Image (cartoon, rainbow, N blue to C red; front, side):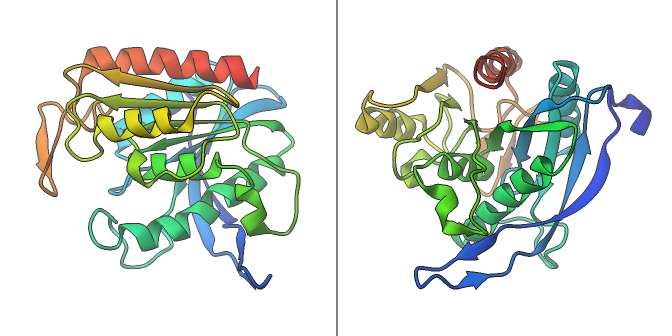
Length: 259
């Protein structure tokens, strides 16, 4: 199926960011894998770090996301937080929080890796996460988030987008432009939690945009969820109209803040 991709994916390996404890001690990063794709040319291009959901990222979603973004001039690095962690097939149940703690360094490790590529502009990198990965995307958008990691650097994500994130678990208001896309019928990460959280954050600071899609369930962006299915007690279903609109809004959001 490799020839079905608009831009070939290259498997790469990088190190997750070392995590700084309150005492100042660093926990060394882990080796992480990901899939990298880039537009033709030498760049430097803006880039997107893609963060999968608790069950990983399906091949059709990889293809959809990569083909669309590479065609628009973005380098894409889809982080695979499970490949090098033996025994981790998913983190959709009791292991979710522990896995989240380990995945945030993966996002920053991906940022550092991209910053080291001559074809990437390190000042124009966004995080785009799905469900549990959306939680990671919201966390890296928080004020002073990068200070938890080392070595010290002025690297920062420029913007963040989250599909179906568990907003109840989000903390401080994002300090970078942020886009949240969620279905009104989501019974796993309820839209009401996002509405309440965004309202509690107020309007001071960088823009935080919340889009709620009527009639859409969790996983509305994923083409392989057609027809819908039950996963871990929750209903997941592709919604073509919502997915198309979300893609358009994501592209506009990235163009506005990275170009």
